[in-house]
Amino acid sequence: MSFRHLALLAQTKSNDQLVWDSLGLNSSNPPSSILIDRLEKMRTWIESPHFPEEMRIKIINEAPVEMLQNFSDDEKLVLANLTEMLENCSWDLDTIASCIVDSAKSIEKSPRVAYGVSYICLMGAKKGPRLAPILVELNQREIVNQFRLCLENVN
Image 1 (cartoon, rainbow, N blue to C red):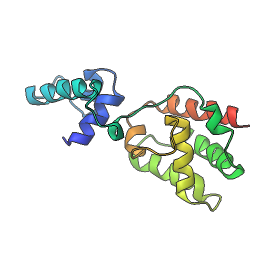
Image 2: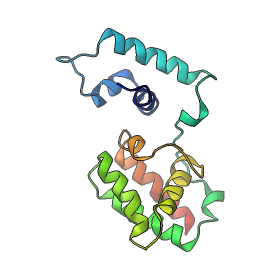
Image 3: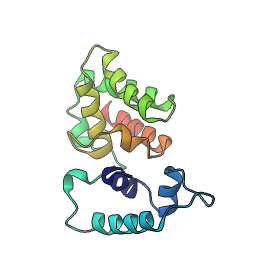
């Protein structure tokens, strides 16, 4: 297991069992004592001031109204497209990544527009870490609801 992936899971899963479930580990294929120890140490590090900010994942659960007020018509359209696409997609890494890109390409805009919209709506920031690997570990309904909340506040 890579360091980055464990850091991602430790931040997106609220308890150890959800981490093990995500990795396909269960009672018949339990995590090793080394992996259990690594996860415990990772969670401690994440909670400390020494964890690098660029690796910290912060998903917001409110609409960043001030940032949404600055959305262009193109960004509003990408947000609407992305919300609909993510609501109706298979929740896997490749499909999520395609939805993000296609939400902008469908109106002949750069995928950068879609990523910018996504970071603002989900993290309250203009940029952030690779998005699809994070989203696949989160609940689809909660992510779509966050985009819907932003959509309601942008119109």
